[in-house]
Length: 235
Ligand code: APR
Image (cartoon, rainbow, N blue to C red; front, side, top):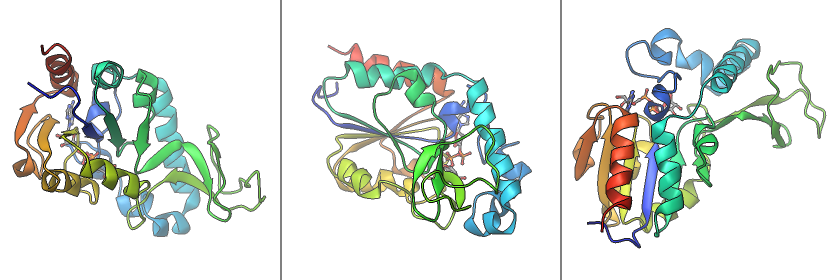
């Protein structure tokens, strides 16, 4: 039985949004099996062909608007609402399905493609449906706009806040991530070093499955609601 004052830190990846209809990256048919990440998810790729990169994120942003949160997103929103202890939700995803399911506070360590960023003055604003290389920043008026997402080779957002959460975690839960991209893939070890119990909820064992004390493998829409129910309903 879990101590009901426990601080639960959750990391989610593309797998939690898969059953909503959004593609993952490394599964069969995943985005990086169809596109080269060097062209679409690096600063160099953006410099080489900004129109192509912006078109990719316009397409992904349009897809997010067409889909809905699934039972796994809703289960995490329920946990945030009903768990008496602290819940910290960190996501690698750039979609807004956690927010739309009702999670009150979501730490987007890889950014969000619902926001545009000015590379010149760091201003952020709601991304238009169609971003183009000729767009100008509404504040400094320079044509230096880009998606507010973290590309390979760039530093993820909120790392200090995440590190502090992991230091005080009693339970660390990894959901729908392959455990291949750092620093997120190292969070389980960080939490373990801080004395947390670690749990993996994933379709199949991830690359760092060996770091987890417990695991429930299956579709997120099944294993995540079952896990939340087991916590909330426990005496
Ligand atoms: N339910 C649960 N897990 C699932 C489901 C599902 N329905 N479908 C797939 N998965 C699991 C896969 O087994 C895999 O372990 O989700 C994981 C998806 O892994 P990736 O495609 O590598 O996605 P992710 O781990 O989020 O990638 C991390 O890489 O490209 C960068 O910035 C990008 O944030 C992303 C990061």
